Length: 407
Image (cartoon, rainbow, N blue to C red; front, side, top):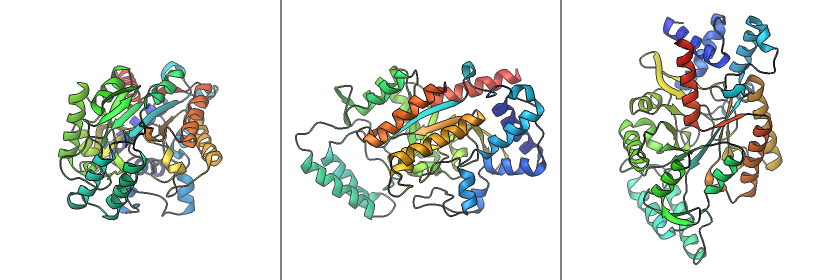
């Protein structure tokens, strides 16, 4: 390994264990480096139907490894040897107020209303001519809009109470990040969300635009992040344009991002995000099952494979997503199995003192299974005294802590 790679690994070890001088074998150091930098994804194009790398096509052993934060386990064991007195307590914590682990709460805002179906019908049919991707998808979406155009006449907006997510999180003293989509002016994909920032929604009983809803959420202390469009993962102009649109609305810098459909090219995406001023990303996860894509639950700095150096972009890896648990093209678990998977993942993170990042889509707030699973996870995390935070709060804590350690 080159010196720059060794420095990268040492920085991660010191940040995630709170210890310096943890000595690794060359084999383990190389394995950790390759995992954190997603090097394997550059040589093994095992992508799913939406071009997101997946381990579903790997061996059973590889799938099992993805369910554990194996890097964190290795480093925990080594840290206990170096500093055994630090392991007398249940955890050696790196989180505020000596909290045993972190719970990063996030929401991808893919839909904002169940109404405006005539507008949705037009936009979805328009994609047949102007958007890239499989043509059957906008046809299916348009058919759904046509059905709802008839069946939703005279009905109220069933998605008109996104504030319920905030009320629930506030109950436990937590805040979250809402990743909003900015409709691209060009390079549209059939996979993109189809709402615009001036569309009408209902929030906390008041009719307003999506932009006004964003400002209301922001002013209450929750974070607004960017849900980068499908093609923005490899297009810096698109990502910059979408970031600027949200910043214009809330009049502050957007530092947090998650790409739509978790589309992430390890060679291109992190470099683009860093170039446009994104400070943290939470795209690196799996679309179809729970687990640790890079082998760790801790935040880590992204790597520039072209220039061989670390990037000023902190990855906050996503371990649990609602649709990966419940949808029929994913693990399709029932409520009990999904909860067991979620608690097992929380156990794993707590055992290494890491960060459990959740992604629950707010449009499922009327689905009792999705909603109750989120309620239970917040209850359990609160009972275990976790630090609940948004992606932006986590980024600020992590970077300030690193800066204090090197001052």
